[in-house]
Length: 210
Image (cartoon, rainbow, N blue to C red; front, top):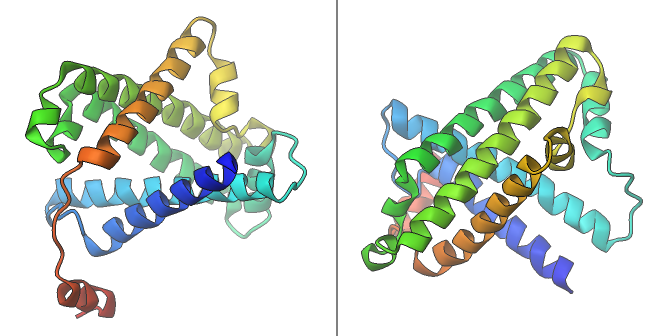
């Protein structure tokens, strides 16, 4: 039951981030910063859709040997230009990692929260720890993907599990604690995030391309 709830949450968040990237629901703007934020939203959405698929695979009882990243890299390299796609994907992950680390440093995530909640120090620091941990994991995963593409070796690809195992203890414990903080912050964000009202007719025009 917990996996079903997790899969539903991951899917909902992934779809929302993809819609934000496509239709600018969060009103990021059309300057370079806004376009970068929309790109980050799209990458985040894609990652959460992949996590949804992994959760669904567990629910269905599909076999898993813990090497999903390597299998995905092998499939990608079988496509025309597959190694380039791995390098591109790894580069985008590294860019997304930089965005996460900048958010952690500047605490820019607080602007999306209700003011009285954003002023809480524990909210600020849990968000900072969470975004920093995500940035480090994304950077290492991107590094693995770029290496797999450059060396045409799918075994060099890795996801979160490989990223954490690559780090020495107690650094990996600290990163895991940071990811826990991000989960805590996500609950706060789910309850107190300030959402922009998007008129239904306006969103329909965006979907239609008008």
